[in-house]
Every structure is written in structure tokens, then in C-alpha cells.
Image 1 (cartoon, rainbow, N blue to C red):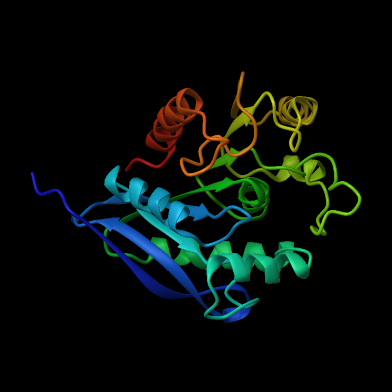
Image 2 (cartoon, rainbow, N blue to C red):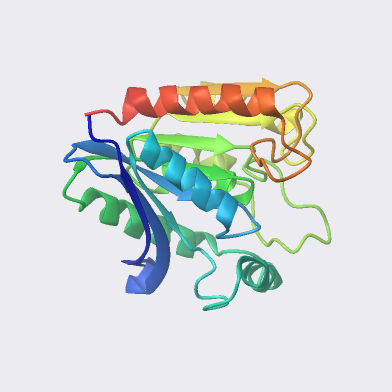
Length: 247
């Protein structure tokens, strides 16, 4: 069986029809296959998140990561672009929704697409994954330790975002949540608060909280990496997408 993937920088139409940079990785097969939108963490459109995008391609999905900071610092490296975005209070929610809608349209238009699209996000991207799933018609969503879905940023935080719990009623797809018991943003209490709202709204979801893990436990290049939590988390993510994004 032929086994190959293609990964490349592409241009997609984002919010307002803007052309923005994105990273596309896909299996070199006829398909049909599902699509995964990867929302990068606050450090930005960087090498580790591109590696995650390639992992999804290796697992048989068309995966696309839009550069959410493209407008804030065109041509800049991940660190400078992330700093520029933070200085502006983070990515505006309306712009995020438009960029994810553009990414979904791009994935659905690929010749090998089966029409199903899921979204996954890490850190700030976890919140944005939830935001996308309550704002757009999607087939599956994964929130990896996304802060401020419930609760608000602490005083002095550069992020100018608000909680999203009140939008839970609009969740368009099943939601998988992966969190660390030692995380502060989101804290276990905030995770429980969101879970109660999902129950109250009758939504399909599955939450897992990992003992001994804090924020960013998927990040293999950071001290926060927790192999056992990350390996189990990857297994759950692939099972989730396999259930809801298969042909």
C-alpha cells in the first residue's frame, strides 16, 4: 500500500476574504478522507504545531493549520508574530471564526475530501476550537486545555477575551476535552463548570483530566511535556476523529 504525505505552505481565504498563510499536510491518496483544522497555541504558527499537523496527515487526514497571526506581523517568525498578537489583546473572536470557516472551506474543496471537518486546538487554540464549534457547522471538536471557555483572564493578562460558556447551547458537534489536573488556566473547577453546562444542554462530549499534568502537556519540546498523558491523549483524539470524521 502506497504510504506518503505532502506538507506545504499554502494560501487560503480567511475572515473577510483576506488571503492568509496556512500549513497543509495531507496523505497522498485518492481518499475520501476527513479534514482536521489545527489551531495553533499562543506561541504561534511554529514548528511543533506544524509537526502535529503532519501527524494528522500520517494518520490519514487532510490537516490544515491557518496562521492566525498572519495579519499581525506578516513575514515575521513565530515569536515576533505571537508578541505582536499579544500586544493587540490576542486574535479577535470574530476574525478567528472567519479564518476557521475559510480553513474548513479549503479542506472541503480538496479532491480527496469526504466533506467532514473537525477542529482541534491547544492552549489559546483550545478556547478557539470551542469557539469555532459553537459558531460553525463542524463534525467534531477537540479542546486541549483551552483557558477562558469559562472564567476570564486574570488582571494584567494581555489577552482581551471573554468566557464562552453561554454559547454551549450552540455547540454543533461532539466535543472531546483533554485537561491537566495541575493546570491553573483552565483550573479543574473551570473544567467541571463547563462539563456541567454541556450536561445541562444535552451535548455529546467526553472529558479527561490527567493527574500529574499541567498546561501544555502535549508539548514535546517543553518541560511541561507529560508522556503518559500525551500518549493517552493522542489515542483518544484519533479515536474521536475516527468516530466522527470517517467516510
